[in-house]
Length: 351
Image 1 (spheres, helix red, strand yellow):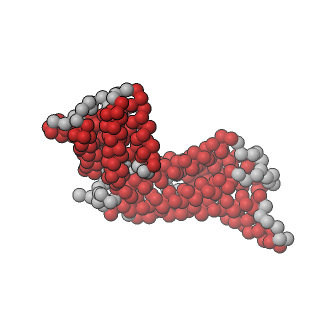
Image 2 (cartoon, helix red, strand yellow):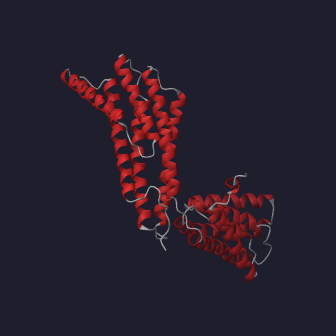
Image 3 (tube, helix red, strand yellow):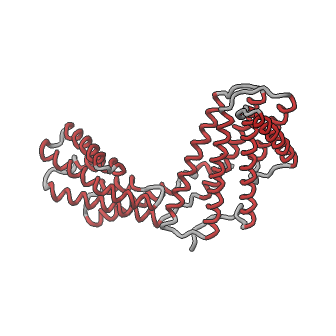
């Protein structure tokens, strides 16, 4: 049987872009105005959130006016030549940069160079018409972005956090193997750790998108509560990455055989907890943590007695106990989501 998901390539932004282009061209055609510049504007104006579309529209409009003005000026002075294209593009980019219209640089440059081949006389009238068509593209795409298929990023955030947990479990297990074998951190382990930080930044961006959507669309209380819990999980994940990073850069240290086994068993247990979507720990895990706590306080008292800084082993124990505490918090959040029946409930806009 053919997997239908292979052909599911039409995302929300693609559909909205198509609708915005169609409506923009239809409006310009009904008025009798050229619609190439309007269509170009509509294509590049669709943003991840409605708030971004509206905010950047106020930047792209004056930027487009600058591009159109340079096109009129250089066409009048030099005609349509390769030099004209270069001057329009460079002048538009420099002007947008100086005026801090960075979000409108692309639209302005495209507007300027596209106008060169369609304007030969009546420069001021052509300038006003092109500015009006650009406004139609901006307004249409912004309205489409607000009304059509409002995005809901919470399911994506949930899925990415689950994947992030599994990636963390792999990094922890790999680093645990290196520490237990008294090996320095491998290059591949460091690369995987850096990918964790990058993934958290991506999820943080999606969370920011979701907050912006709340300004234009009403979500149910259940949806907002679910997002709130997912964001708390992300905050804990960020702290987990911090403590994992401390373990990544911890120097290799030879342990006694019994201690070596407990450390390795703890890393393995962390791996199992992070692989579990409930973040539930076993009785054996709690026993390991109790052993780590006893050793940590014994080391700390000994080091305080002789006035020494934390040893490598004490530091390792501290990081492991901190990771355990964060995993307990993740499990507590899962239980709260279960209480409100949020773990399997769909997230939707309110009516």
